[in-house]
Image (cartoon, rainbow, N blue to C red; front, side):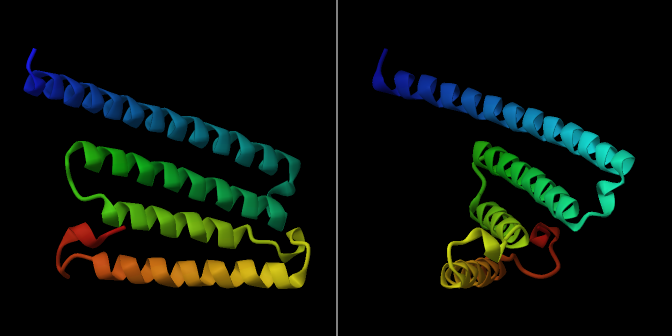
Length: 146
């Protein structure tokens, strides 16, 4: 076997692994949706659905599911040899937003530490949204939808 044949074989193997990764993400998403359904049902039955902490936890779970979808989209785009930069930035926006939503200043050792993290998260969101804006395609195309 010459070098080109080896490269061809490894490229096919990598492509196969990418497809397996996509299926794993679909499975994780399905499990997450099923778990979310069970959680919502349990909260409704217990009456805890109106508890703010429980609602924040639900939003956190939903955003985690969105992250799984975006990682799936990244794998698919990469497999199709399409640009993944915008998808990765969109995923990062969702991930940082998730951190902001579950942010609790009381979880930190001092108010100074909480403030530092809050400022860091704000800077990250501004930078990521700016990057997303810069990566947006021309107006009038449907590719600009997150």
